[in-house]
Length: 188
Image (tube, helix red, strand yellow):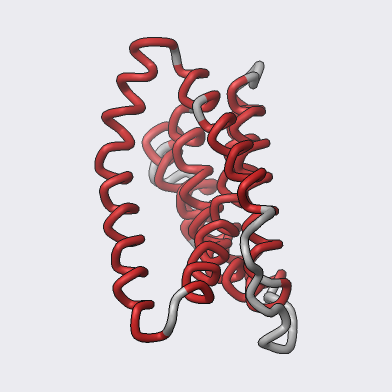
C-alpha cells in the first residue's frame, strides 16, 4: 500500500505533465492554473480524511493530476508576465525553487509527520491552496487557443497505463514472484 501511495502521484504526474502543457495552450494559463490548483487542493483534503489506503491512493491521483496541470500553466503565466529577455532568468529561478522544494520537502514532511501525524502533511496544503486560489483569480491570463487541436487524451491514458503497469511489475515482483504471469504481463 505504501508503494502505491507514493507511486500513484509520480506516475500520474509524469504521464499528465506534457498533455497539461498542451491543454494550457488550448484553454489558457490562468484557467488551467486555477483548475489544477483546485484539483491539487481538493486531492490534499481528500488525502487528509482518507479512511483507507485505496481511498488515499485515489486522492493522490487527483492531487497528481492537479499538480500536472499547475506546472505548465504556472510557466505559461510567468512567461506571459515577463518580457522575452527576462524569461530564461525567471524560469531558472522557478527551477531553483522547485529543486530546493524537492530537497527540503521530505525533511519538512518528516518533521510535520513527527509533530502532528501523516494527515497533517496534506492539511498543510489547504490554507496555501485556498489562498492561492483567491489570489489566482486576479492573475492576468495569457491568450488561449494559440494552438489548434486538443490534447491527446488517448495517448495520455496509454502513458498512465504503461507507467502504471511498469510500476505494478516492479512493486509486486518481489511479492508475487518475478516469474509470475501477472508480473511478466505487466512488464510486457
